[in-house]
Length: 408
Figure 1 (cartoon, helix red, strand yellow):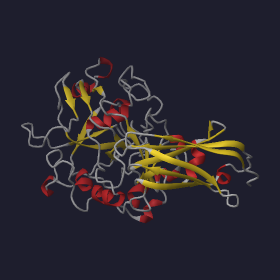
Figure 2 (figure 1 turned 45 degrees about the horizontal axis):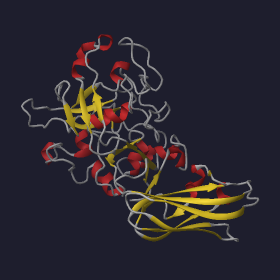
Figure 3 (figure 1 turned 180 degrees about the vertical axis):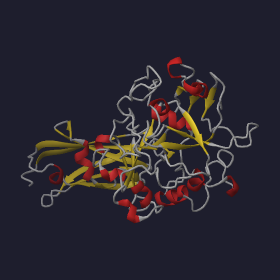
Figure 4 (figure 1 turned 90 degrees about the horizontal axis):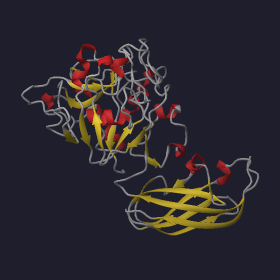
């Protein structure tokens, strides 16, 4: 129960950004309701986050997740207000402190690291500066069912090494020959879902039976019929990445997700986006910094290779960018058509979309990445490449959503 909340004084600070600025920040507290109001003027549209300090020390970010109003979302320019009830966050604590607030405006094209999409209410999107600022831990069941959490991948302007090349210890069946080392540079950041799409999330998007949500709510969607062509559309429908770009068939799964969320760039990642996000800055076989000394070494921590079907997401450690289940569990569709060697060794590529389906090689399969629950550990490596018929049912295949890092 709330005991006391005494304020010795209220002060303010404002953080400016390239998107514009924050002006006229004022803190006020109602003596009856104890509600604190943070008023400010936003000079240009931006995503707004607010930090609170007591005696110069930051209030734990998660305790501020109950803040309401013009905060943690895209906010239009003008006079704005956010509201916070300290007694709802600091139950049993007494304050006798100077309280200050920092209001930060994030540019629309450089929003905070975490985007949370509400799957119960259309186009309800919030943003948080860190994992600690989210209302719950990342592995909370809510984020596997009724919310979609996406992490901004810091990719803009980064030149990185993709592939693995021929390494004797793991050169089983010439897999490594399909992992030609080349260099990739992205021109923009992007958001990636922290989990592959779960069955419960699939149901929330209206793509599965509601009755199925109970037992498998937090499982991967592998055993729902996630054909590539059903999710995005067939070539015969006029849908052919990369020739037709971001287009999808009206009424398909991705189209439904776009319309529900209001994010028209929702899609699968490209192969290069998937591998970059999976690696999270690591050059090793796995994104926990470990390599396989031999082809069939035991799986290091973080690998979901059980042979017993898809597992609940988020039970293994995440990578450096808070992505879970990149290695094993289910393989994940990527946008690209598949060729054994799509890019020349040591070549430089910028935002590579993969080969076109009318190339001389005439690819007929689409890429998927990450291995799956019935494969060996070699197949779960960051660099391993595989493919499947886009119009066929692959029981171990799922998908992880990606979108452009522009606030909605």
